[in-house]
Image 1: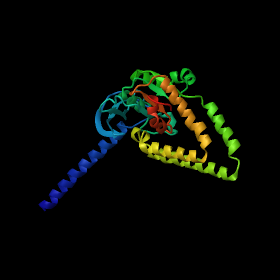
Image 2 (image 1 turned 60 degrees about the vertical axis):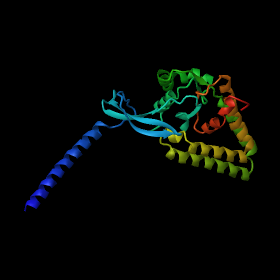
Image 3 (image 1 turned 120 degrees about the horizontal axis):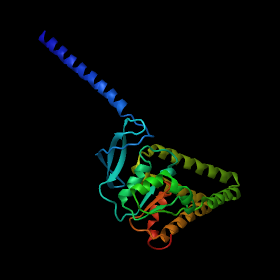
Image 4 (image 1 turned 90 degrees about the vertical axis):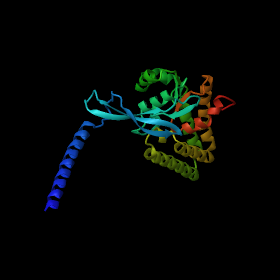
Amino acid sequence: MKTTELNDDKSGTVNVALTRLRAFSVKMLLLLKIRLSCSVVLPGRSVTSKKWEDKPYTVFHLWGECKTCHGIHRSEVLRFTKPLLNIMEVLSSVSGLGTSIQGYNDDVLIEIIRECAPDKVFLAEVTKEDFVKEFKVSEFFGKFQAVVKVPLIPVGLDMTVYEEFKQKFSAENVNTPELAIKKNMLDLIDNTIFNYLAHYWKGPETVNSEVTDSLFRAKHKLFSSVFYDLEKGFWEDRHSKIIENIRKMVPGNSSVIISGVESRYWFKDHTDDLFNGDP
């Protein structure tokens, strides 16, 4: 009899605890809803330590009241354990991904650049003309200037000439069923790589990773073996000229290059060219 009463008491206590826990969980879920359009305004604390390309960093969970909906939201910001001095970094731009990655946005990219403590930041995708007309009024530029406060230098090239070259090459050279099949095969490989990476990318450590670089490096090695003249004229020559533009601006070991995600491997493979020899 006493045993039964004791078990009933325990069950009642557990039920009350579970009810309170469920009520608390519902309240927290309502309170901690996340809206991507909202901004976090209160600081948080460090909760996670990881590594990005063998460099230790910390993920900060930031909690704060949103000015738009007055809810409490959470976001994540990276902070490196130590400044990355004397290491020339190449980082993928957010716009060049071709898809939205929740863990990789302008705020995260700017924070990574800030922790690199660069002397200059080179924009490999942006021409001087586009920088003056559009980039200087972009949201990214405003955030960057407020946080990093170092020169942003556009070194990109006008893609019109290269796109025309590519179209002309295809019209003049892909003129047999065999070559058309090869071109379709390469297009299929290109789509497959981007589809795979769209699921693989979760944040800066996967976007700016050797896995990503290796896939694009292998892709362009294959393209070069099939259509060498196209790869040289459209890809290699264009990137070599961008490297030359960077060299003219006298980069330092702590400079940062922001490039398209597909171009990142190329610039990483040729950063030594900035300080010695020809690209």
